Amino acid sequence: MRSLVEEGVLEVGADHRYHVGLWLWEVASHAPRSGGVQQAALPFMRDLMDITGHPVHLAVREGGHAVFIERMSHWRSRNARPYIGSHYPLHVTSVGLILLAHAPAEFQEEYLAGDLEQRTPLTVKSPGVLRRSLASARSRGFAVSDRQVVMDAISVAAPIRDAHGQVVAAVSVNTPLGSLKELTMAHAVQTTALAITRSLSILQPACPT
Image (cartoon, rainbow, N blue to C red; front, side, top):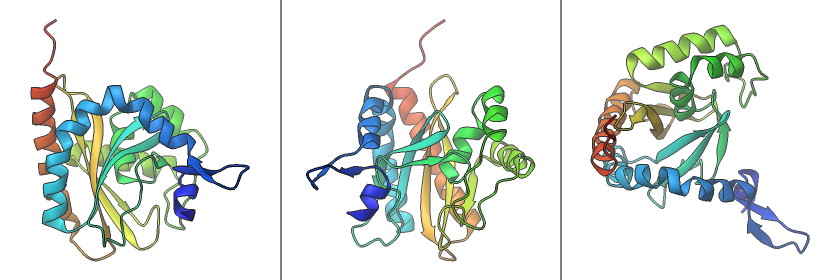
């Protein structure tokens, strides 16, 4: 329960009982906008989880944070966090890096000029280094968070696009350090993201202009 409170999924009230946290309500507020993405993503997230054996996450951007709106994990997984409803600064997670890399340029500069939170000793705080990471994410089609959130895990994410080609979400796989090769993870995640993108374009086709 403590970890759920730390993530904002639950809160402890004055009556010392657990209540739904602010960030879980935040996820609920995304439902009308992200429901189509979740519907498109779930079958492919399950496939990615089964192939890799590791937790898979779906996130969207809310301001300067990545909000996790869906998760797939085996019940015995020790690396299942973040939980649904968790929110992290964009620059520390792989999904956040993807979402930041495809955000408007003005927003990127505003974000990089702000106070960049450090989660671990390896969290990148240099705006210059982050700019290069964002450029790399755009050119390679995936982003990596290597011990940026916790010291024993790595995650790889790829972008999900709507029918207009806009990045609306990101999907990631999280693994213990050293369990899978980065490029192997990247290929699997990119394949999953592409499948979700295609499914989403069927569920929510582009409106004629």
